[in-house]
Length: 92
Image 1 (cartoon, rainbow, N blue to C red):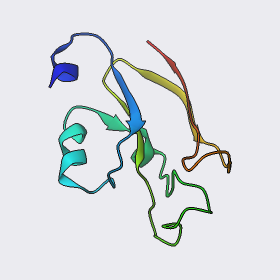
Image 2 (image 1 turned 30 degrees about the vertical axis):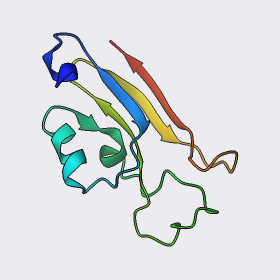
Image 3 (image 1 turned 45 degrees about the vertical axis):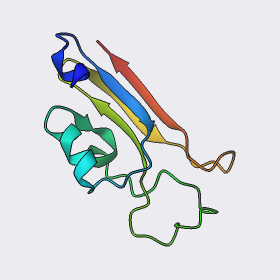
Image 4 (image 1 turned 90 degrees about the vertical axis):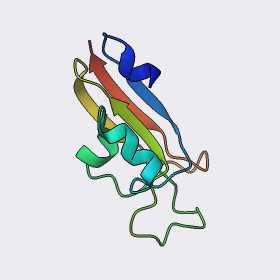
């Protein structure tokens, strides 16, 4: 609710440990755009993850409000962590 109350562009980023279709994530989609969804990302976890066989293994998100100009967004393939790096280039 706090992020919705501000009158400036907002970016919410994090490991939510929730899949995109959960009711908790649906709350964000009313006011924020999920770059994971708009870029058709199927995973934010490396191939070594125990859930890598899922059709969509996404638990990390970048959510942007109106006023954020997304220049580029990418999920990098790396086994350095149990989560893949999310890279956002943006302007406000």
